[in-house]
Image: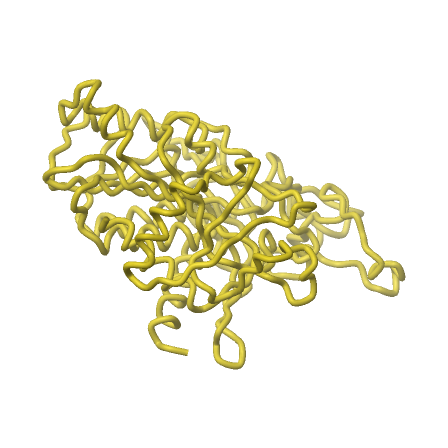
Length: 425
């Protein structure tokens, strides 16, 4: 395996490890943008934007929009990805004692996850908390960097039908063990200690479980890798790198990193929100565009919605389309859906393939089996507020929505190169 593929995958793995939740992912994005010279715009202050500069704006600490403005332009080149992944969220007053023997943690599911792989893994807690200071409320991110909890399986001897299939109940079967005995209040105490604050300063929190199983590059030729949260931090990482690595020529290059895709995007920081539209309106106002300018630039714009798709599975090949069978390391996935779950049409497909062909970047087609209902993603939701030509792409992967997913070692490199070519158009 060529070192360029290994290096790209290892860098992605490092980014994923630093991003246990959407909040840490945006924090990592912001660090990278600042190092690259991007300027921070606040939503509650006036924009003062100039050609030739690069900017970013955050919302809810879990979504971010970054953009580079050339000296002259005729529209936007946009890549969208999402910062969240399926997991478990901690409920308020989350610890309780079972049978006077164990302290367990009360959680609820976030997103459509594969449940069985969450058992018997080292887990911990990350997210954000709001702290009461003397004259204000302060947000702090927190990551408990230790193996803290496990969702423990029932032994085969106590459930002889376990391998015949189980319908897991999250409220009953999937409560993680925190400690032996009664340790109610321990999580608040641990968070306060980690953040060096007092327990009574903690007002509220958004806390999630994260899988601490280490990512691995594996296979006879190191051609595969496995990691938590490949969907969609691979899309986040590749679009971030492409944005930084390229200088815009004829378009304003923009990257959207949006939260809550896994739960429908219907939040103030999701794809159905006004975040993109308001940001573009404020760019237009700052650069003195009139109504005609805005309409022309919108008509000239193009968006890539980047979210992964399903590779051919060696044990379940019947669930793929009968003809289009994408594989790991097969190049950029171009995603199609007759019912418009994906935004790709012949026009957007042709333009994107033209860009890839010029650079010699491999690509492959993804279409769902006609009898298998597929998911949707960001592109068609964003189009409701900002309608431009759009294509859905991603990388092929296995075990999507497992806490430990699998991808091809070459595909991160291919995605970055494809996105760089798009931004250079």
